[in-house]
Image 1 (tube, rainbow, N blue to C red):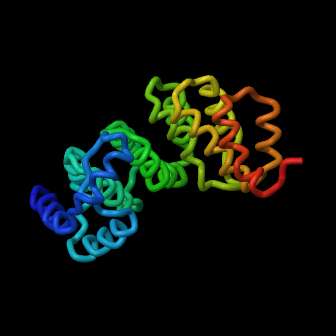
Image 2: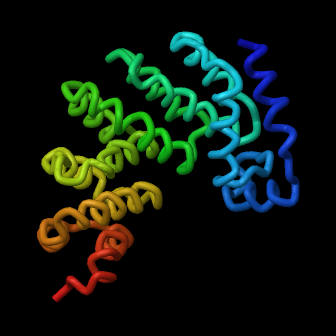
Image 3: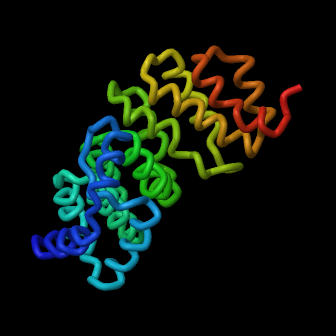
Length: 228
C-alpha cells in the first residue's frame, strides 16, 4: 500500500505547476496546497494512472484513501475519492460509516460535493433502505458538511427525488446562518426546478428560507423566463 501511494506521488509530481498551484490554493481560501493540476487534466491523468497500475482491492482501497487524504496536496484527496468510486460494486451497507468519516476528513466544499455526487448519491441508490436514517442524522448534526450532504445528495435524482426527505432536510436547516448550508438549500431547489419548477416556486412561496437560498433556488427558473 505504501508502494501504491509512492507510485501515485511520483506520477503526479511530474505535473507540478506552481504557477497554477498558487491561484488554486488562493481560490480555496488557502485551506490546502495544490500540485497545480487543472480539473480537466486531472480527469485524464487519473484515467492514465488507473489504466497503468492495478486498482487495489476494496479493503486496501479504504486504507489507501485515508493515506491519500493525509497528504497535503488537494489533488490527492480528489484522487482518493475517484479511487473509492471505482469500487461501487463492492460497497456494503456498513461502508456508509466509512464514507461519513471521509466527508469529515479535510472538509471543504470541493471534496464534500464530490463525495456527495460520486459516492453518497450512488450509495443510497444501491441501499435505499439506509437513506432516511443516515441523512436525517446528518441533517440534524452540528457539522455543516454533513448537513450540506443531507441536502444535496439527491441532486441527480430528478423525478426520483424524495420530496418529503428533501423538504424535511431543508426546513430543518432553513434558518441556519452558515453560507455553505444556505447555498446547499438553494442549489438543491434549483436543480429540482429543472424537473418540476412549479413545485419549487410553490415551496418558496409557502416556506420561509434565507434570501441567499431563495436567490439560488430561482436562478434557473428566472433564466428560463418561467416566473410569471
